[in-house]
Length: 260
Length: 248
Image 1 (cartoon, each protein chain N blue to C red):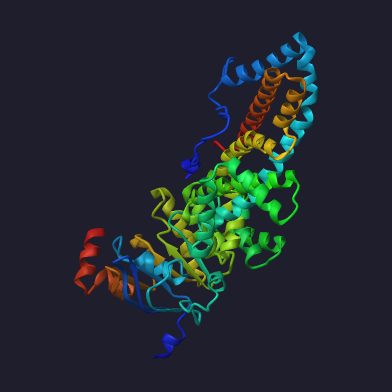
Image 2: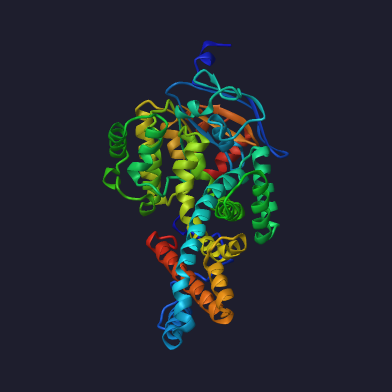
């Protein structure tokens, strides 16, 4: 019974989440993280123009990147939960809708989806670029999230549902009180992973006139003609953020005892 | 139809069940009366667990009727959740909820299904934990308990609903030998309290001591039934004799 807790969902995307075996001074994570910060600091000190100017220009974009990522992931979690429940539903219509959604979304590149939702929504209602960016990211990631929820729910032994139902609980009550709280532990690592992946993919929204980190960089570069310097800084800032987040997620997982 | 059939708590009428082409239950009929203790024996794959699981509709049947406490559970208009509230079930694999403490395991369905207050639920839970002998473990998570203790939590969890009927599906088969006794003792006490019980088991000692009636199943059908006295000492059917020779 105790060994049932296993990582059923493989990490396939995003920055590698550091494993606990990774001890010692020179872990890949430490080298990358400290290296990136050191290079940023060195560039700013040694060549303040343009690096310091770039560095002070970017924070507004970092804020927008975070805003898009957090809003999209929250919406994607809701979509993912219902998609996951739909995928395991015995009702052929609900199951069909959820399955088609997952298949269609997974078969279309995110960039194409972004364009499509932006212009399709634009034909019907006047949606700000930011909102349509968030919706597009959420619709896309909701499909992947749905598969994570499905796998998480299916990882809980059938006996748990049977025990809950035998006590008179409805299917929904059993899901809410028995299955989902247990599935949560299994799906936390891949969700953390999706968060980091979404943050990186959010750079695509820069084409929709959303001033995220990448777009701020482009704005600066095209005015000052410092393309190489600006994109060097943009890449380093993304790297520091994703490395920091993946570390934070792995610490959170350990606190919650996901790997036990 | 005799009056005893009409007053039976559980009426299984000509029930059939298929798993693909395999016939798991073959035209099974049996009645269980109030306060009766029925033990179902048989080799693995004989359909005894399937019969038990049909009674609270964890398995849906393909033919016949099952009536529990006057309600036809095979009628699609029946709210099966309401019927299940009255039927406790204990599983071979315990199926305690690992994310909840022992006390919360027993409280959950009381508050969610029976709509009892937290306070009332806890009182009932503590009383039952005392009865099954693990009151000192109320704040422990089930994974820290032995198999025998987990199964006693599962029994208390089912009893907390105040069921009219208890189903036991090989409750001791997954236990280490030294823990079987503690679970059987709880079940014996339950029988003494007058609980109606249907028990699928391989524990012959329990069948002899506790059962009012022993039912022997094979190939999805009831081969023979009778008192333990009759069943263990004067079985009439050849299949029963072979089975008893193999296990005794």
